[in-house]
Length: 350
Image 1 (cartoon, rainbow, N blue to C red):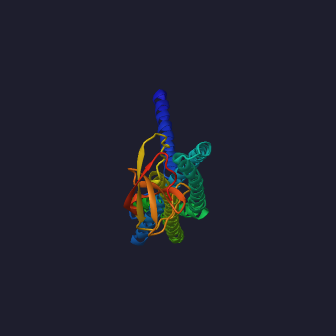
Image 2 (image 1 turned 30 degrees about the vertical axis):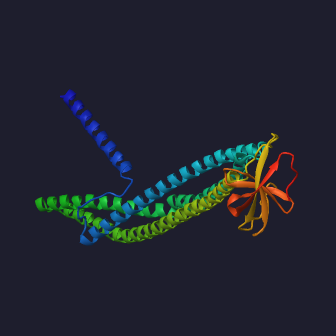
């Protein structure tokens, strides 16, 4: 019998420890607001409980969303600084190439233009990073870790624990009532009255705490909504401004590069001097339009001037003399009037 009694005591101890462990686990795992569809006191309290549950879930969802925005903004900022590092290096390489190959080299000029532009692009990236930090990251981090948010959620958690206590107390009252019905002794009645008095106290405290928790959570929820919306707008405006400015910078350098290429392609051809003998046929042409030279290699003339044309190139340019000066001009600006036969020994034609 002693052995059986010891074994029974051991089992009771194990069950007791297991129950205590489960209670501890429940206490630490229920750090949030406990969901329950049980009417503990009355319908008014049930509505308050449902309101707190909804607000608690809303503030938790709002905080989680703020954390996701912070995580994204931190990633954008890290990528931005990497972009600045890479772009700065490329800018230096472009400027160096342009400086070392600057003699009549369209690629070198384009490299220099692009290298200078990249400096402005990286400056815009730096400004975007600063905006993300001051206008998005700092306010959201402050809100996520704010005292009002934690205080409001702690009030709701206190209400949830108090509600669980009231539910336990309601079960205690039911047991006391059953015992009084079985044996209406004075001691049992006194215990029932004590349990009912404690329930009334819990009910009064829950009413006060419930209103306070609901007001605090509602205020925090509204602040979360407002602040998160403002920070999203700030992020959108910052990114929009950044991309518009970068597009403007790149548009300018693209126009400059294309213009330089077109000038290079339409420039008068470089033709080697001819030292051979024989007869060359020049011709006289009249200017149909005025033309102003854009370089020392070109020839200026006015409408109606006569030009001695000595070469016509397939690129659309001609070479000739007018008013004692020689140079290249667009072939379409003149019209042939008369051929002039000359020899390689002939002097200049005026």
